[in-house]
Image (cartoon, rainbow, N blue to C red; front, side):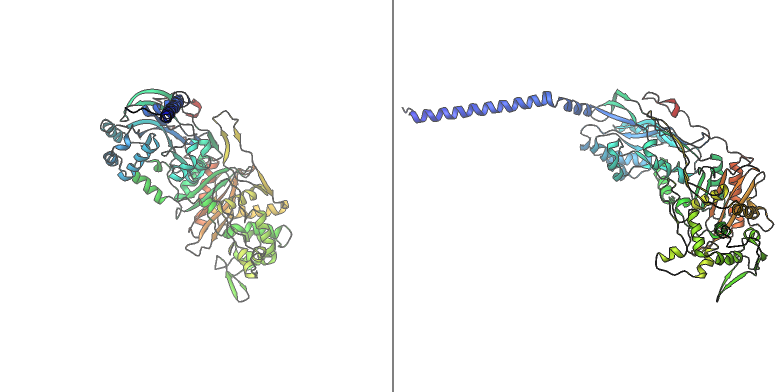
Length: 618
C-alpha cells in the first residue's frame, strides 16, 4: 500500500483550489449573463419577440392637396387597393419563386423582379407593396391567392390622383417609385423600399411638405405570415396643402391650344404683370401623371419611355426673332438715337458691303417710320436703326430686360440663355462686326432666350418697366401646426424709361395686333385691348420657330395677364402663335363661352383600419 507524501498532499490541494476557482468564475459569468438577459436586454428581447409575432401593415398617408388660385384641386388623393406581402418567421428558408410566378401572371409583372422584391421584404423584415391602384377584377382574383400563399394581403390606402390629367404636368410633376439609391438616403426619414416619391415639378420640389406621415396597423401573425388579430392602430397624418398662383381656366386654355398647334411642341407662359405670379405654365409634349400610377407595369414603362421631362418654358433656349424688336426700340428711342418720325425705305433687302440681308417680306414695305416698322415687323427698318443705335447699346438693354440671366423662378433646369453683343464677344476674345449688329437688331445671331424670360419681358412692357421674379406658390397650409407660408411678390429691378418711350412702344404693339399691316390679327380678343409682337426665329436644325409675346387689358384698366408663346418648328408666326395667345387672354378674362368647371372631387378616402384623418385635407 502506497501513501502520498507531504509534496503530493500540497499538489492535490492546489488542484482542488483551482477547480473551485473555475467553478466560481463560471458562476459569476453565468450570473452576469443572466442579469444581462433578464434585466439589461429584456426590452430588446421583448421587441424581438414582438417582431417575430407581429407585422406592421403600413398605409400610405394622403399627400397634401395642390390647388389653383381659386381653390380648384389639381392634385389630390383617392382610395385605392394595394397588394402587400408580409414575410413570416423562417420565410427565408422557403422558396418564394412559385409565389413570384403566380403574382407575376396576375399582375402582369416580371416574376424575377417580384422575386427580388419578396427577398427584400424578408431581408428587411418588413411588409412591402407589390402592386398599387388595383382594378376591381384583379383584386378579386388576388383575394383567392391569399388562401394559397400566406403573407399576401390587400389593403386600402391613399393614392395620388390628378383630376385634370395632362394639366400643367411639367409644373405639377408626378409620383414615382423610390429607387434603391434614394431609399438608402431617405430610409431614416421613414421611407420604405416600396415608397413613392415626388418627381419633377411641385411634387418633387415640395416632397417634404406634401408627404404625410404614414399610418398603419400592427397585426399579430403566425409563423407563415397569416394575419391573426389587430394589436395596434396608428393614425396617419396627411401632408400640407399647397395653393398655387396658377389659374385653372388659363392653364387649361394654354395646354389645349398648345397641343392643337401646328407641331404640338413648345411652351406657353402667362404672368400677372402686377406681381409676377404665374397664371399658366405649359410645356409640350406633356404627359398624364395618372398613367404613371397605373397598376399595369407595361403602361407605366410605355409612359416613362415617352416622357419628356424637359420643361421647354424654362429649359428650352431659342432665338427670339422679332419679339426682340421692342427692346431694340427702347434702346433707340430712350436717348434719341432714332427719330420715330423719320422714314426708312424697304425694297425687301438691305445691303451691307458685299453682304445682302433680306426682309421677311421680299416684296418690301416701302417707306416706313417707327410705328409702321414695328407694325409690319419690317426687318430693313430695324437693320437700319440697329446700326444707328449700336450693338453696345442694344446689349445694355438686353440686360436691363433680364436677358442672359435666369429669372430665378423656383424650378429646376432653368437656363440663362445667351447674351449677344460686343461686350459678350470681347469676353471670349472675339471681334464684333456691323453684320452682327444687323443680326442682333432682329433678334437673330447668338442671342438665346427662354419662354419664361420673354414672358418677363412682356410683363415689363405691360407694366412699364417693373421686373418681377416669377413665382407659382400662393401659400402653403402646413398640417403640423405651423403658421401658413404666404408668398410675397419680389421686385427684381426697374427699367426707367421716359413715358413717351413707353407710349410709342405700346402704340406700336397695339398696331401689331390691330393695325392694317399688323402681323398678329389672330390675337385679337373681343372686349380686350391686346398689344403684342410676333417673331419667327431661325432654326438651323429644321423649320423656324414661331413666337408671340404680348399682354391684354380691359379698356381703362391695367393689364392682368402677359404672355409668351413659343411653337417649335411652327414656321411663320402670324398664323401659329397669336391664336394661342388669344385663347389664353379669353380664358384669363373669362370671355370664352365654354368655361372649364371644377372637376368632381374624388370619393372620401375610406379608413377601415385606422381613425379618420383631419377633415380639412380630404
